[in-house]
Length: 283
Image (cartoon, rainbow, N blue to C red; front, side, top):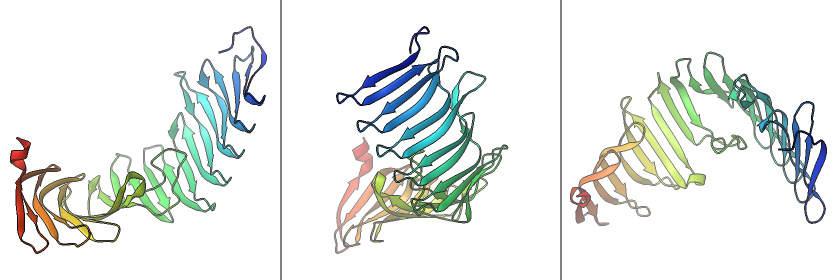
């Protein structure tokens, strides 16, 4: 921080004399303003602080000069600096990514999410009583009631889980169904190349804790099948298939995602090649 008896602008420079930052201290309001720059001279970040806490308008930029984020910080009664009001996020090319409303650091009210072409893809609504849901391509999804229980159809937004800089602009990678917070119906998981879980899973729920699961590769070839217990723990008899030829490769028991007992390993002609006793291996 700057000393209280200092005022005016302080400039820091790159070797080529372009600005790295400009810091200004207002002795009356005690607010410091910060401006940071890329090597090419374009702005990187503009913000304000008071006693090391962000306050007021906050703007960050891409290196090409386009705005990345515009928002507002407010210091609450507990002296905490939090996001407040409407925050706007943009794609590098300039189109709006999302418009998100905050109150004291938490999302509240109506938020909007767009794809790279500028098309509105998702509305997110968070009500004062805790009810929370989204409207994705006209379909109401991801509904949490005021008691905190999941209801109805839930989907995974493939570009929203990394950070607030990445929002949904593609098809959902997961489809799930809930009733009073418990799983039901048929679930589908199409995997994620970003997390190297490329392939598909299909769950058929027998009750709220037990489902039969099919796992396929990118070519829709069955890789393994068996029962799971919620949320996704392998349990009971499982069968594994050859990745290329599709023949039964192995079968045996799982207990809470761990292989147990004797597993049969098969040759391509269906004859047993060997038996592996996982109970002995554990010991």
